[in-house]
Length: 180
Image (cartoon, rainbow, N blue to C red; front, side, top):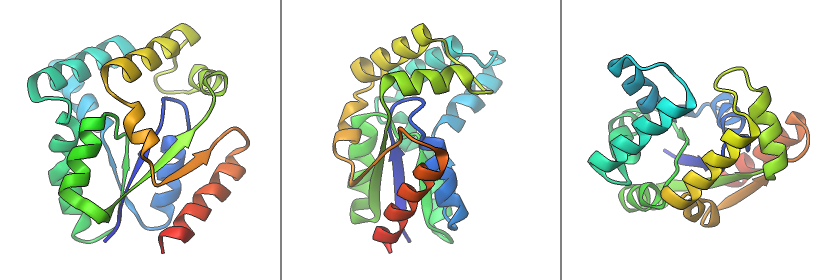
């Protein structure tokens, strides 16, 4: 079975690419589900501040590879019967841990969009919209504190998402064909 991890900055189109992989039979494991579940467990409102606090606390408690480690059972279970697409791999440590664990079975796909494009998208999204200031703050935090640039730089494939959704889907199809 194949495992593909989608990497990129917030608003780049990672979830759209993951959705396209799902349409091709991949089962999705979304790393952010851990945050959502923890917010619910703690009775916190779902917003950028609380999400960031929970992410930081989990990483302080468990290390920078926390989300990869916490999702291993979900990934392993899904790989028993399906190819898997991981939406939301962030840190270098997560990447290194998954690469060490899955080896050649893991392929990474970076989705890139300019900050201006991403900030427009993030302001318009229905769930967890961000202002330009919040989006820029998240970028800074993710790059400086989460080592997010490494997995993007080491991606096996890169999709540039500056055009239409149809173009993004075409680029995703190109990657899917290359993986066969």
